[in-house]
Amino acid sequence: MPPKKKKCDVCIVGGGPAGLAALSAIHEPVSGGCYTLDSMTNTQVNNANRFMKRSGKVGPSEKKICVVDPNDAWLAGWRANFARLGIEFLRSPALAHPDHFDMNALLAYAVANDRENELIESGCSKIRELHGLGQTQVGLWKLPSTALFEDFCVSLARQLPHDYVKGTAVDLIRSEEDGDDAEYTVSLADGTEITSSAVVLALGPTGTPVVPPNLCNIPEDRLIRWQDMQSKLASGHETVLVVGGGLTAVQAAQYCLRKGKRVHLCSRRPIVERHFDIDNCWFDKRTANKQISGFYHQPEACRLEALRAVRGGGSVPPIYMTDLRKWQGKGTLTLVHGEEPEYLRAAEDGKLLISIEQRERAFDCVVLACGIKPDCMVSPLVRNIQEKIPLKLVGGYPSVSVDLEWTKNLFVVGGLAGLNVGPDAGNIMGARRAASIVANALECKSWLREGGEGRGALSNPFELLWDDDSASSTDSDSE
Image: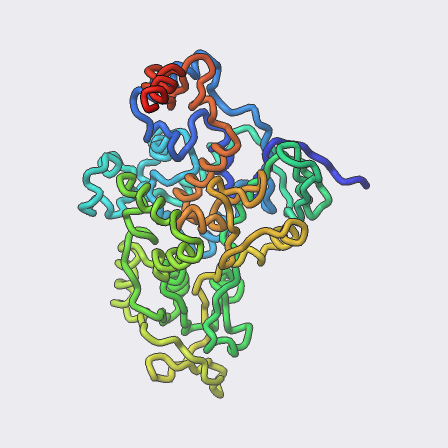
């Protein structure tokens, strides 16, 4: 049977929040980054509105877009991870979502659907540095429920024309033509071939799970990754050691506690209490551009170190720490830090004897939530790309251009773009910014600059003061 063939202008590989952000950025009449209604001046907004009415530039772009993902629907992988940990509310505020047209979109969706009760206070309104932002006053720093965020994303995807293809992308081949005529063929595991002028990789976190070396000898059935807790955490596992110092480790501990387990949560350093996984200055629009610019203008090796330093090994929001203290008060949770646990041996009763703080303790199993070591080569698709088009890697990340191009018309967004986007690349706001860069590189928003008849919405308002004679007269005066 011959392979099924499809053709599109842009193929997005990945149906998570980063992929949806890319779809929105390409389709929306005004994209993210420097072209959002939230960041444009009133004059620019009015110019854009007039031009959209005059030229018909309202609604989705004419580009045909295909989205490839192994799951049946948008955000299915994201939803599965949240369900595994029983996460009810996002860590990201309501202003962080994939819609590029309006920062208020998620909040407006909640109000329109009478779901404002699914937005809870994050505590950000108490952060003094953020008081000057109007966002804190209207509720944009509240935390949406997982269900609200997912329903909003599904609603957004329905509004944006695209062809959603269930399948696993396993290979990518570039045609032999040079320049803009070159095309890519994305091959799926079922034999489907998708030909596209541009490809956007939105693969999500990619790397190898970190396993502390002193725990490597624990029997496989007793050393459980947090993703496997639902299937491997048995009723007989009454005492559990959770290893990790970030939010995922805390959520894994909470999951075990809700299952009636006695839990030790062990981290190398004291748990850092912070609203977001990076400092507020990366979220505050008054300082974010300075942070991003300072990051980008460093050498790649320095950026790699900065990625590790800024995230600092993870952090936990205050609402989670409040819950941990309640479990501590009940006597079912113990927090320990400062020393990596070391597996000693199995006791006669089958329990795992592990040294923590120079004391021998017994556990039924160990749950690992130590994060991943970034390595895009873990992805079979990326490995196959590298075999055909050897591309530069730095510290497990693709080395991409300022436009997030890995090679001509092959773009990277999401966590894999961290080397250029910054430490928030894997977050929703970073993914939205990356998607905006890609949309601009694909010239989806060139009409905002050029404007066809007359000036574009973002053109220089003083450009009419310049003419060719002014330049030549300046030259003659200097002679």
